[in-house]
Length: 254
Image (tube, rainbow, N blue to C red; front, side, top):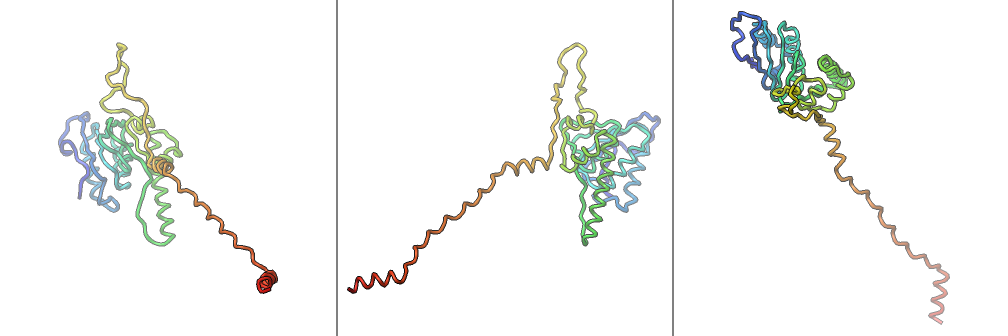
């Protein structure tokens, strides 16, 4: 069993108070061996999570992975009795972004990124099998949207559009759209003495859409010139009548 998570200190440590805070790190791909039909990995994660009941801080730096593993981790964190704070220090992409939505508070490093997109799979078979695969992906997308909508309050249509475009968000944009609550290392509050805040953050976020960038680049490519029509063929000389030719020959001979 390959663990993609680890605790800052042993989960089995005896704790005397529910106020003791624990730190969990999720690094790298989520369940490369997949949790589909795997009973050991989720059971081990749940056992370590429930070894305490105090607040938990979850640091995420993951490109994503198994959507079903992410769904189970999301549910375990949502069901956890203690407070859960998610901190994204590198990237929370794809399935990892779903786990991030389980945080009662989601904080992002100013240099981190969050990415959401449509689920994908590999399928084989006839046309009926392809249709079943599409139907499955459509339902998985709807389940993912449930987690985003619950956290952000955005409409399902808006979230679906963001996923269609494979949207990358920096910390500012993630906070603006509701995927995150705060940017780490900056409180953003105005000083009471009227002086300038310690961090003068640009409050405008940037939204990166892979599809939009691709379409923009294609639009800037020079369009092929229309093929010019071939010049008309020179007109063939008009034919000479036979009687006229005989007349000219008679003039020569006489």
